[in-house]
Image (cartoon, rainbow, N blue to C red):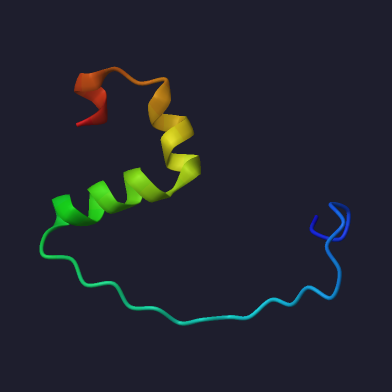
Length: 51
């Protein structure tokens, strides 16, 4: 994808990361705010269903 967009000499690296959340709600909010796939899925749901 990057090469097709004109980028050259691209590299990928794997990074291990640990996230600590104080609650399940905090984790859920993080996922909903950062995961574009989840945002797309939730965009078609009612406010009641999103909670």
